[in-house]
Image 1 (tube, rainbow, N blue to C red):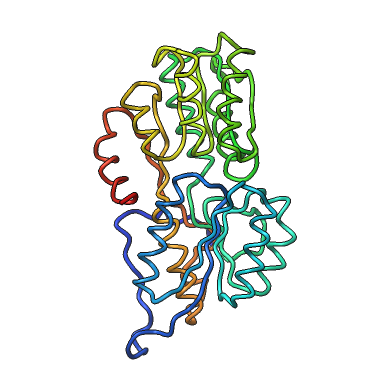
Image 2 (image 1 turned 120 degrees about the vertical axis):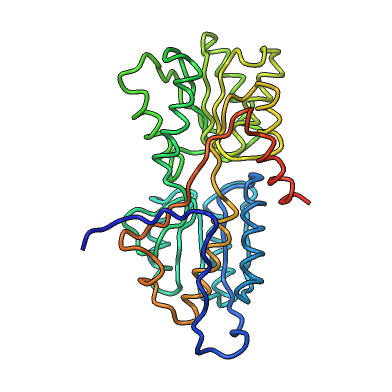
Length: 317
């Protein structure tokens, strides 16, 4: 059978529990684990809350304060002690967590969200096609620089979704007069991310482009540019995700573009799938053969900020 990937387009058609059930289904308990303390997870949490109501689920959400594997490990143990039927996790470092997650998949319904575990035993992956998302960011940078320049890449770590995004960036830059002069990691520390930008600019003063692969990298870059009194737009910045700071940066010309994921749907669809599987649905009927459900990404620039900002405000009420 030919394998293919579902492209999940909004609005989502909600799958319902079998009609042979009478009344409201019994509550199920599931877990949702994020990978860092960025604001985007507040949006995912709203998706989780909506799915809880729609599918009669109790979902425990954990956001690791320091983006450390040990924090995720502790949360996994706590969720198992609470006897959850399923867990959706965004692994911080898929390769380092492979053994633990594969063992976990033998005991509980396991999904990866936002970051995949290639070749793992999880039931499937829900999130962006991060390779294509990286290409989208790189194409925006190529346009911003007019096809020529020196670029610095910033990220929390260079594993999981960041690694795939970086691969997409490099693919687009091949054969072009754009050179990646440095790749700088902050290991999940937003304060360090800003210091990294300031240091990188001192070391590479002729840089004219920056790409931030994690959600807080964009605001960190903007904060550093302001502190160094660099004129808005002099250095082209492309980043990922959405926040008040990022949208303000777009309006103020500090940020050229941001690639937005549908984090709300990551939360909603993860909980929905785990609930349906817990109630007897065959995972093969819900997840395509390739094991991936891709949620589309969008490129946001200054001229499209206002509409997105209105949507974002609803998640921070």
